[in-house]
Length: 138
Image (cartoon, rainbow, N blue to C red; front, top):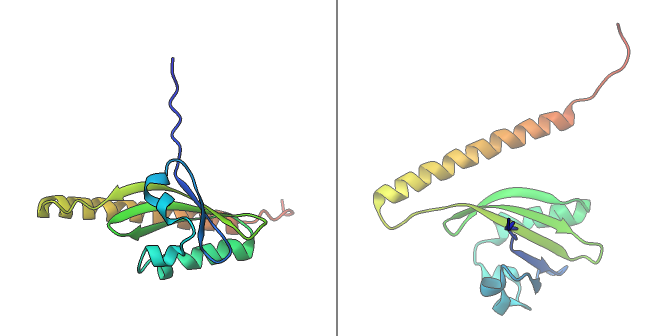
């Protein structure tokens, strides 16, 4: 029996947010952009993504977030490396269907439902992190 392994696309940014490495599953979109500042390649994306990237670098901890950009909703993992570089991995969650009004309405509903579910999950995880076990008592 053959096993299929799903590879997620990845890109590596240097400390100045230049694209310095591209994984094979992102080569077609990002390969020609190596050496470019990511914000120049994707207009309007800086205020949406950079705060998360900066937070990951500051904390030294991986950061995961859901973001809508250019008609797509994706889950992004930003993993800092010791050399100031940032590994970015993502998976597409949904894409807006703009071919018909019905398709657009359906895909918007689907996107909003997905984002609501993610928001509930993030709140649940944050509450779990805040719980502390207090010893003592009976």
